[in-house]
Picture 1 (cartoon, helix red, strand yellow):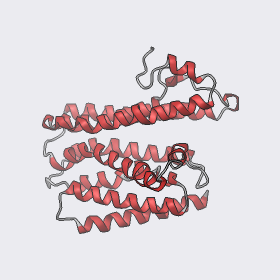
Picture 2 (cartoon, helix red, strand yellow):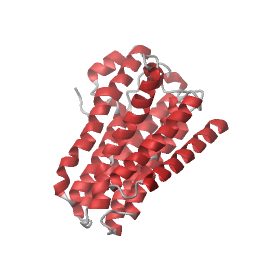
Picture 3 (cartoon, one colour):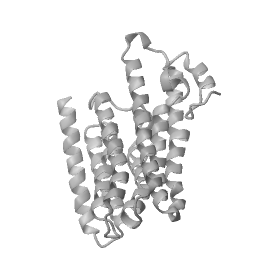
Picture 4 (tube, helix red, strand yellow):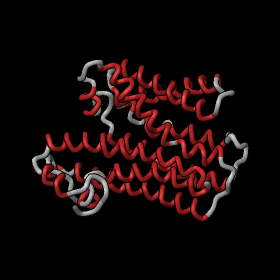
Length: 284
């Protein structure tokens, strides 16, 4: 495991340095375009490393690690050149809480370079595997996260409006979404760690009413970013498309892939699928 973590840390450090170099070359461009190219450059570095070590799961923590420098940069260097500490704290805190929580969750579950996400393995068995790996496993998620972070760019860097009561509510909502996701993950971890549950479907706690409460919490987090921005400036209402696309990715792709895998591995999952909603914790 120490080798796996060392490889990951070196890979991400190299990705960060490469992103800084590219961003420095684009300082005269629009700030978000600059960050986008830096984000993509870092992704390519991770992709190259995943090819060298033949494990695309090297990309997994990138989902939560990459937003940290992006959001911190926006907070320190807004395009408006105006920093409102109260607003900045209320927007940045939920993002950092989410990022550190999700990264820690990854580190607790990761089994090292010898373990690769089954979804990646399946995708890479198709024709043009390297292109699917590059664009489907690496670049697409990066573009998805980049788009979903766009409300933070408008809230922190563009808008000069101050914090208000609604921002406090939106910030609390976003933090609550992360807590919800954390509770779901911990319930599942406890269930899996029990040897008596091998081959069984988790139907307790939040999982009794939702097949994917962890993903529900993740989706609500991204909606929270939009809510925080629109709470300080309703003129940015059109940014709802950002969390909506993230929402659709989870509900139409990720959740379905997990359901199909569970149907193959658990005899009792078909009944669970018929009686429990995909995301919304409401009885069918």
